[in-house]
Amino acid sequence: MTELIINRPDDWHAHLRDGNALVQTCKDMARYFQRVIVMPNLAPPITTVAMAAEYRERILFAMSGLPRQFEPLMILYLTDQTDAAEIRRAAEADFVHGFKLYPAGATTNSEAGVTGTESLYPILAAMEEAGLPLLIHGEVTDADIDIFDREKAFIDRHLAPMTTHFPALRMVLEHITTRDAVQFIRSAPSTMAATITAHHLLFNRNHMLVGGIRPHYYCLPILKRDIHQKALIDAACSGSPRFFLGTDSAPHTTINKENSCGCAGVYTGHAAIEFYAEVFEQHSALNKLEGFSSHFGADFYQLPRNTDCITLRKESWQVDDQLPLGSATLTPLCSGERVQWRVLDENS
Ligand code: DOR
Ligand code: ZN
Image (cartoon, rainbow, N blue to C red):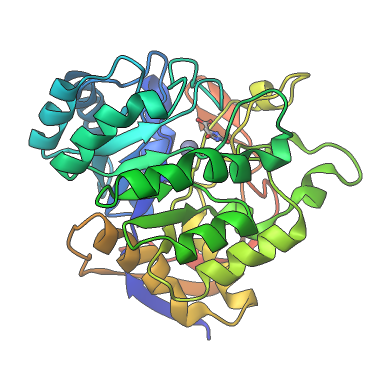
């Protein structure tokens, strides 16, 4: 197959950052996506509807000169202080689409995240009542749990009890990385779904660690061993509506990644759909790409499917070595390498 036309995709998990970083992040997202779930882990985090409204305006302003725009779907950041009144305000705001649970200390800008899940139960009950989804960074932060086991420990200790207590709360386990997470989602009630990134489909921990440490593959949850990568590929290519696209594209400056304490995040916004297409093609599942990229997420979030289309052509191109990020630069995934698919620009 040399050309593939699919309904326009949505990205159900992305980091756009703020200020002059928005120029690059929004331009990349706008090329493909109709809707983008915007992660709230700014510094300070987006914890209220009022903050989300202002952040949304800044995103729309950054896109005003672009040939096409996406619709930013705003998410609020849960803290130990989030109260039921904020949940009600969020449910009334048509641009807010859920809350994000970051365990405190789990990842970038998560210091203000939650320190326990059981103390959150009254708030989760209010979300269940309001019909707002909960998006979850599923990793424990306990120092005695090995970094490669943190997702499984979160599922066992926190997520399994949450699904029992809140049978009507829609939950998305974000950027899953393990066979355990795939199995959990497959056997969980239909209120549970998961996003999968392109980088967790393309790579495993050998890519990051064999022959030298490659900081541009470092993200959280961390890349796991190949059996987990294979389970993620099977899930994404299975056609199950419980698994859908969330890039977790996360820009950091090259200097902050190539550092003795490099930060977590992989930037895929420049070639998001192309990366996914490569994986689906390698596993003879190109016919499953549209459901994963353009249908299942919308269905889960109870939003209409997109009706317009994008065209992918099998045509190799070279990724730029560096892309601008505000006044600095970032190193995009597969920097300087060739990508096998290209999304055609609307007017070409
Ligand atoms: O690798 C990651 N980067 N994982 C996250 O959970 C956050 C993200 C970021 O904000 O950079
Ligand atoms: Zn993320």
